[in-house]
Image (cartoon, rainbow, N blue to C red; front, side, top):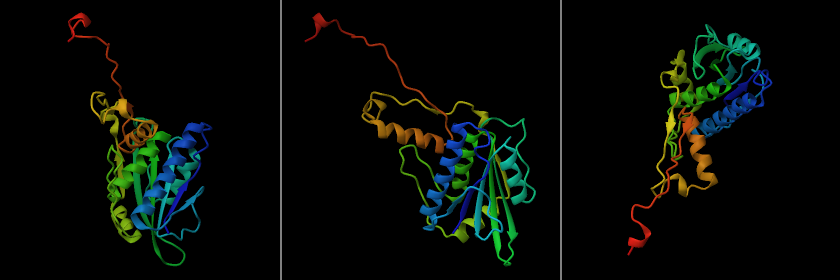
Length: 220
């Protein structure tokens, strides 16, 4: 089966960073299972030697441990630099041959922040063919692991820069049956989760002053 490795994600000591990358790794594992029907291994370190046909390694820029792992695992990997935006993330794939002579693919995901690494996971899944929708009904293709490795093997190197629009999100209207006035806790959770998958970072809720157009004594 494929493997998902998250190395050094707790090196910053910030529990939010650990949560973002850990959740991202679990989401990647879940979606790869939905696509391939094979449950990936979830690893804390890059396996040596690599035996999986596909291994995805998650890292955060500025974290030396995870950057070293990415540089070691991937040929020609160039870490993100300080000039990159806080939401920028990089996808990099590299073919290699293991000790058994089998051809394997390693894919590295690195974000300028832990949240950007989470964005990288969903950018990778879009490259696989997964489509994310705000209402939660994602479009998930059915592919083999070989199909995925061929798609991602052609990727080689791609940097995503969503900083062109720094605030990205929605401002839903309340005066519709689908609006946030009618949402329960689960609805809010679904919308928040899907916004992250769409690499958005904002939700605005209207606050309108209450008033009556017609005086009460004229009401019929």
